[in-house]
Length: 213
Image (tube, rainbow, N blue to C red; front, side):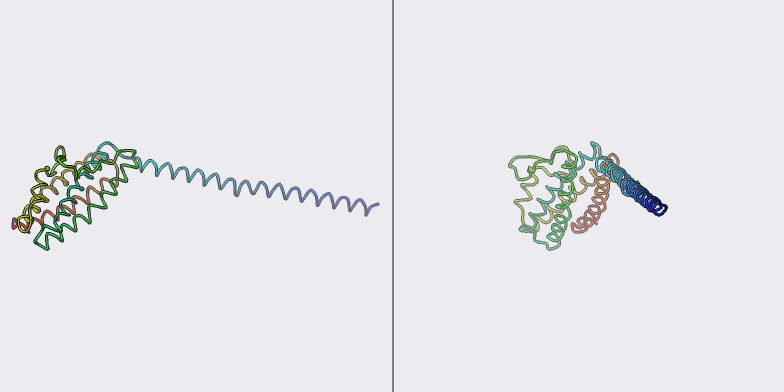
């Protein structure tokens, strides 16, 4: 009888211990995995919100800068492409290649910003007959200027290209300074800095090529 009771007691204790272990495991699981997951979710959510806030931290000046600089860069690229077949100086051709190589990627970058902001990417009007893009943007060539450059060749083209590109770069620097003063989007103000640095150096180079300094 005593042995039978002892066996029952041991069985009951074992069962109780097993249930307790299962309860502890379940609680531990909730604490270790569930609690951790909640923390991760909150952390990830916070990071996402912060990233979204940073990505969206732009203002009207940023939109205007990207919209106008895309068009400004497109005209510079058009001018640079003319140099391939019209320039006589290898130095002019090399400079034109450098300008195109720098500004093409920047056009893509700024177009990406506008898309992410839900803004329209400006239509490429550069090849449209009779369309004048010069109004409202400093340094932009008129359609007549572009026609003259297109019809020039040799040394005449070289001089015309350099004089026009100096003016064009000066306009881009003016636009970049406005962005630095009024813009909010960090990547845009950084690009404005890059434009100022690169194009100031190119203006100096072009003036030397023109014999002006």
